[in-house]
Image (cartoon, rainbow over the protein chains, first blue to last red):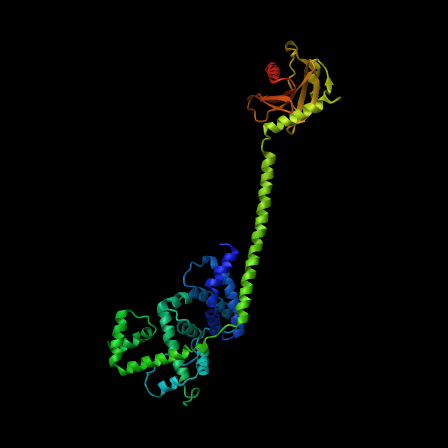
Length: 176
Length: 242
């Protein structure tokens, strides 16, 4: 594969997933400027590694590189983005009910959801973004995040539970 | 299916990750259980909230073109080392070719040409001989100290060849002894230098520019004989000389 052909094939198969790459990087970093730099970096890495691309699913392949690039950057940055226990008592299962909380949830607006998602621990947020935004399967998320399938399910379950709690906290989400 | 079992499968059901059999079991349970139905509805509400397209971060057009530019630059920077390596390889191959060319044995026809050149030059006035003597006992010692071998100088007067003299020459990058014989008006040069390979070779001949060339090797010497004599006469001479 000569270089012109490589660029051509890369732009045909990988570049269409720029949106997914940026979305993941933005939700992981919560910073548009950093996300742009990381996505560009990830694309150059992806291009360098394109010879190893064997025509598998392009989106998970690219997102793996985006995730690794972003994680490396996050670890180098100050502070730990991987802290889990920012919210107390998240292990306590809440009984779902068709009562006021469900209506509260249904009445949430987009900014509330955006803020709540941004507050989630990084691992949960990552799993939710890959599942809800990108529609990746558990298996794909497990491969991409390099964790067992059970961990993916646990992160998704706990992430959703956290999100519900954040969105239905009376102080932050007053009923309308 | 109990509620407890259903709740364990509910998330995977929502995410469409259940086997068809489990999917059926969960759906049967949801038909009959209001609490689990509520839980499922809540999960779906949350999922719908997240799937708001407005939450999906869109990259700027500027990022797309920046990346496209960077990728194509990558192509150029990647191509440059390739060009350099090609150039290096070309020079390397050329160097090897030259080395091979310099080291390979010079083809006999090139030596023949060289021998004829030398022969023609020797016929120009004043070039033929360094040591004018018909006496082989004068000619042979003359080479001592001038060459690192001692050329044989046979007496061929019985065959009609008169020794005229000897000369130093340089053939095929070797210092060579040139012996000059004469019969009638015809000069004949015999070039001798050590046979590095040590393999003797039968006589072979070639012709160029009106001159006949015969050459051969014995265990110690290469010899080239050149003259304007016809081939049969030169062959007689060569046999006599051998």
